[in-house]
Image (cartoon, rainbow, N blue to C red; front, side, top):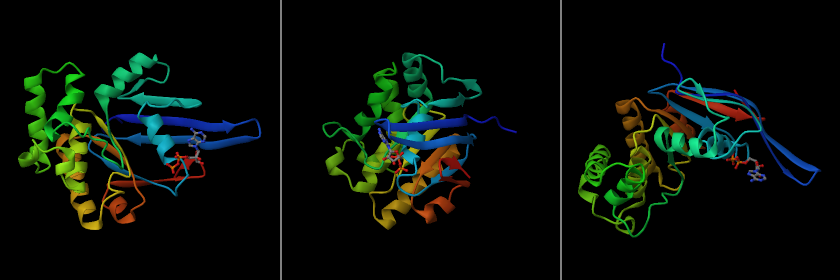
Length: 225
Ligand code: ADP
């Protein structure tokens, strides 16, 4: 049996606005994510999906609980160490592509590699390979404004994969696209996850999409069921 690449154990998180107003968002979340699987995270708006993805992506810290990446506990690491782990192991896809407008598709995918110490030549090779995987080889010199919404989002998926992460975290990655584009962008994402044995946790409101994933988990009353 595979070992989980990401494991969350008894994660708790609350926000307080003054002493009266404490919001307990996560009340003991347990979740395992295995290599090669796509997991849909489904919950009503405000239930804590973004909070959970931020914690899983080491962008925010839980109040308590453990986070294991490939079997190693990391919640007590320094901020610098967490940044390193995040850069190497985790890729993010958001609802809005957040591509840099003054750079081409390929350059947008090169950038995270260059900041990770990869040579420009190798970064370009990898970027072109990724663009080929999502059928955008002929758009590598286009700037984001010269791409359709679906194409922009496919470039954002390539950027998330640039540094060969083990985990992809996506927050409503197709929430901003029409139905047909949603389907093709989503197919690209699923194909890459399978081909590269990644693990993907994808928050979505779209139950059709959720049902195309390997597993659906629901966040209800601060817990995963
Ligand atoms: P979702 O992504 O499921 O819509 P969120 O994780 O964004 O939910 O938010 C969960 C709850 O936590 C909401 O009630 C939200 O208002 C609250 N919340 C989120 N971030 C903060 C914050 N930084 N400070 C205070 N409350 C927050």
